[in-house]
Amino acid sequence: MKRLSIYAVIFFMLGSMMFSRSEQPESQAWSLLQEMLLIPGVSGQESRVADFVFSSIPMTLNPNRDEMENVWFTAGEGEPHILFVAHTDEIGLIVEQITQDGTLKVEGRGGFFPKMYEGHLVVVYTKKGPVDGVVIPRKGSFSMTPDASYFDIRDIEIYLGVSTKEEAENLEISPGDQITIK
Image (cartoon, rainbow, N blue to C red; front, side):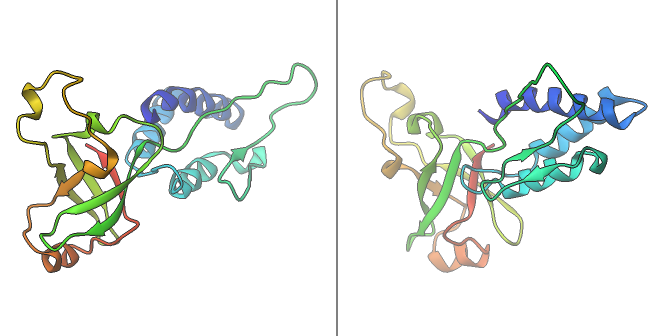
């Protein structure tokens, strides 16, 4: 979802740069896009992405922001009025609990199919920095037919390469940390 929305943001950035008289708007837009893609913004925790978008808009356009992390500006005057809308959040997970064996139980954010995460690499964004992990696949999951077994968000566990809760906490993992697919 985030990647699809990014194309909309490119359009937004190019439009805003036209008004800022940038010498190379295309390369600047791609640089901004690259930076923005590296900012975690799981649904409900997209304030860092909104901070980036807001700070990227030239102040001469008088950007605005509200408590829901919406960012907007008005360029020009008169007709026609055009509204451009794009998401700044991405589908992901939030750490709900660290288990005694050091794996993570999670809560889903945004709309997705949990089975799509099974066996995939993920990144947990901690206060200390990113930590790699993997969604533990069920035994035989890759040989099952698509409808053979239901996989729910409650079935997702993240393995971090540790074997105790204490080791996971030493990585500065804590409930509420964002998790995105790698």
